[in-house]
Image (cartoon, rainbow, N blue to C red):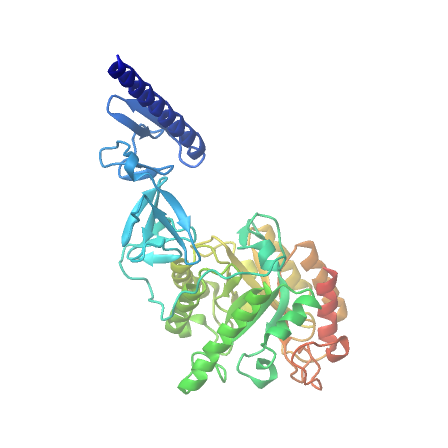
Length: 468
């Protein structure tokens, strides 16, 4: 009799265990189906998971439950995600994957030699995004251009800063939007040549903070000249080249620490056509997009002012070469493409836009004394034709940076910018003795400028940013 009672007790416990398992799997199914559509099914051999198309899970985890190579659930391999200060990993009992791919909730993840999930990088031919999930495959095992730098980890932005609020920006229709799809406006200043004495001393954290706190700017544009003196593409000694690279790194660090957006600007000018330094541009943007692929605040301007006889067809060919290089490393960074005639022919884009259109905007530059209603009309017409426009350089004097200020034209530009919620960077954060310099040539301060330290142009743009 005692044996029978024990047997009945064991039987009840087994039934209870089965009920608990069924409830657990049902709960897991209910919770996980928001992400993984399908259902758990029990038959004589055990539990399995069926997808809406009739197929079933094999060699993968669904909601933390392991389905083996034949599709049956194996309880001993139940697993879960874990995280520490180094990163994420997936663990089942004492086991965790190392040097391998693992499918979890229909997504493929790669775990390195230490068992940590890889993110924002290529694993052979396969790319894993910022969530760690495999998102794309290239035909070659090698990148288009191999980056000659290291990828930096995900940064932290100050609470309530522009980047903390906006996150990774995206282009929706003709508008620049934050990560939630709400329209945003970037506004700030462009540096002068980053190696030139008139401007390089103003590339410091305190200067950027002055623009952020006093001017209410949320963006810096970093002008990396290509062919002028101190340019990235001309022959000069190793020390100066490293100084250029370090200046770029410092500027991105300062902006990131302040939670500001920053445009890395490939500032072609006297080289006319961006294809003249195509190989250098390919390596530069491979390096920058790989290094900063985890940064939500970095934008790429791939050609400042194509000019001379350079056509939109030539610029598009260049852009269609550079954009895939950036996209290999960074799926969603905003990319800015210059237009013909010193970035004034944004109206030519709509008929033949770049091949990879996601998060791409097109550049227009204006100098109010030189560029009046004709260019404002082009901007408005371009947007109506579906072209996303970004003003990466502007001032209120003549196009050579000197001469008198045309306040009437400047106010008309302000209205176009406000009415169309256009983002803009004013030229330039320097004390050079010219009208477009934002700081008086007599001012030797490199941050903390008061209104009395600013040029007429500087005062006007400060007021504009504070108003908008």
